[in-house]
Image (cartoon, one colour):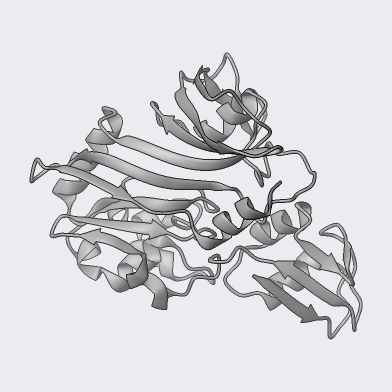
Length: 303
């Protein structure tokens, strides 16, 4: 989704201009868009600290669903019963505010400029918070740019049961990713991931925790592949770190994907499917969300 803005007053930095004129997006998110070449000033890619002048045209290529309105919440619902809510999270949507103030006072999730899953649940499913469900029912998380299937517990008992199932690895999770290059048809990556001393980025490192992911190529093109990923452990950024480790990063990954052509509009990672046994009915449960339009459109543009 392209958005064109005309500069009305000189400003010392491009990211400051974007932050002022695009509500619902954090400055960090907008700086990342600039870094990945998704913002132009008078047709040229510039740095986030570039001064901008009155009359210049700023164009930003936003992820199609990143500006999802709370009015769209019901369209995100894949399934719902008395215990469980399953959402198809849009790309660009935060799970919850940074920090832990919202855990002590959940209403704080609604206080910021930017919406998030925790805030939307409070507005559209207030019974979850009234029941005393921890973390507004959020039992697992997806990175901000990652779209797809998200489980929400509607009461404390379901929260405890689902959380235990994740810990015991009873959840069968499947992701889809567009990766750079052509990996082997199938592969198993068993490599510890974590942070090197003094570093923020999560990478494969002998100092990390054990992590295992299975990969399968669904279909391929000359410069990229659509890959199915099954994380057998649940480490932060596991799929992204493992794909980078084998030389095929997720396209659009600001941490691992090299700058190059074509540039993805966002992280091309989607939580495609989750399967498990319903903790209270005992019946098999399987929920699937097709990749969103921006994901499919980008795949079609590749050679």
